[in-house]
Length: 86
Image (tube, rainbow, N blue to C red; front, side, top):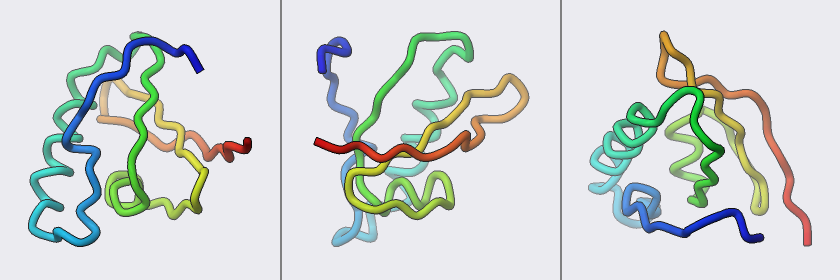
């Protein structure tokens, strides 16, 4: 897709089978998002259903994504969903 450099973010790892990782992962992910500039470049994060649901309250199927808009007065808001197809 050539969207830029790929960087690992352990907070995006699934906690489906490691429930003890849920709170640390979500806390770290919220911290990461809160440090991004509201007017910054697009960031594409790839993660798992459990992480998306915990962060957004949205349920998604395989191959779907959730769009977030960063806010000055709040961490972010859900703008919509996307379906990615081959």
